[in-house]
Length: 457
Ligand code: GLY
Image (tube, rainbow, N blue to C red; front, side, top):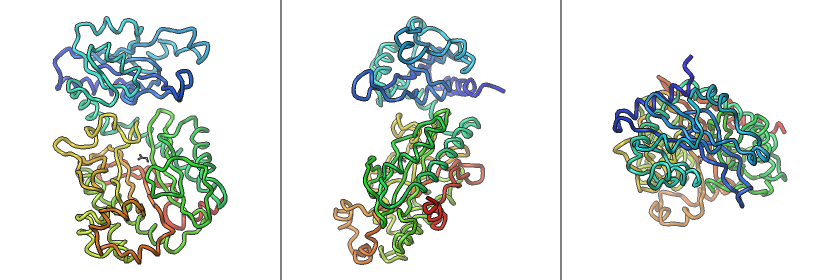
């Protein structure tokens, strides 16, 4: 079998060859542990995703150079001080075997690049980006893609958009840990307990598997705050708890799942009504996922179904298609239907909208669509999230958008639903030749399955 990372580097070299002058070297940084509040107190290290994609190795302070069919991993010199506090770096021979790349000391990289045309992708780590600047002889800044590096960004996007078998196995492994974590979180929920206890239950599963959360877990009874920060708030019997939490696989691949459940173990009739509307919207979106389908149309399928449901409940008035086209449904579903998923939970978002938006497409400035992170035609092997929601956001319901909606929102009916602040339902799907596989399908989602899982505590 060809080493998967050797194959990935060969694909990058082929993609790049069509876009840059002959003899161009592609340079990738792994990054360093980032300080928390002073230099020696750092967050756990995770290599930059482009580097990880091409090596599978999470090594601090390393660089990878791809020069045609030659790949070399440049490793920091052994450092007694580092060994004393953090342990010795892996042996060069061990890394050569693990990555299928040649290995050389970092000190020789500058000489190897001298006189060469070098393209690079800015590390998200400022210290590594400073070194990149020195090595390529121009400013390289986290999050800022230089026009000279665009061909490399486009080559990476072409390769990372469609997942190989190795990546799909990692995504499935991340989804399996996340499923176990969500079940633990459901059964840890009870009135009087704190949100932080539920977060701990989820993350205990993740940590026990040797992994890390793929992003900051969102565990909140204030689901109307889309990315609510962690708190130790006490949960009450009538609350809905929104948990948006995903694990990384051991290889660093992401999963991203949201479930919303009643703290008491039983949805109230009003909570249940809205939950069913969001669930139907999510299913409508999953049903249209297939190769060749424009992702923005997946968003519209979800928004249309949500509008239909809200019209049926009497919260909205009018034709569902018009409610979507006029942005009225965005009052309750303000974000996009989802995003790319891969090594990053928002895959390749370090490259801005270049990965998410197909050439010639740009983000809309219209409220509701402006948060759509992906607008490509789907292809077999792409992984995306599907995550509609319903939120009663006071700032939106008192703002200009609400005024424009006029009598198409029935405030009296909406007022019956005050025990629903926010509901989101999210799964991870991989596009297949005929539709999609839902990687996170085992996590309870129907009203009955969710209630059963919460009552199991
Ligand atoms: N689930 C977190 C996010 O999509 O940002």
